[in-house]
Length: 299
Image (cartoon, rainbow, N blue to C red):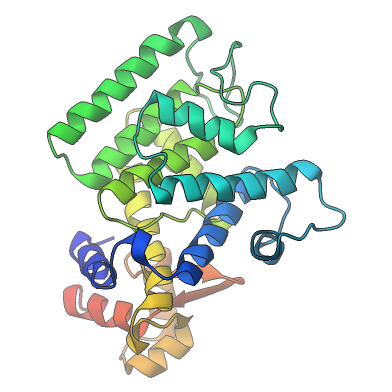
């Protein structure tokens, strides 16, 4: 994703105020999408509509595992803690607090570092043994502080921090969800919105992490940039102008009056060049995103 395009979208977002000052309805929509996405890529069976029902109405969903319902409610609670600033640092204490909020009553060791060695399903990488955990976590925390002091690039820093945490894999279960909440703390602290990682992103996300485990971190940084663009246009759809409306690619093409074909727009979205988001199995973008792309990239 072109960084200039990303920054222009961010400026449009900041013109509407900080994340914490956005209308409650807009924040709730972001919470719902984030909660559904982060849980679904870990195997939670609730659909987006069901997650919406549970969070907005407090209603249960029949024929779904109790754990899936608890994960939904408790991840929403964790996001509230993060956005409100009650859990606001990227460090070991926040990781423990988030894990406890997420998995209290679900995991026996909620809020505690793992006491056993673990493997990452589908990965050739092996996390460190238990006796190395605390020293590695302390190094991870200090490394993040150094990056913050040096004011390193926000996305390179995010990729480095997230990969570092996931490579340590400090919990018996729930490492991905805690790690993605830490990512959101990082982005909020740098005046970016919540980053959404949705079910169709799962393979790209895991591939980017696998590359990072083998010291190729640019794929993870690029993945985060692309998904942040998706998150920005999702938020702008709720708080922006008429040009920020999320439309199907064909609708956006017609409204924007662009010379680009729908097929071309689809290609650029899938390549991570044009901001887009997949909702209800349809790729969407905004006339503004197309306009900025045309201005910056051309054909």
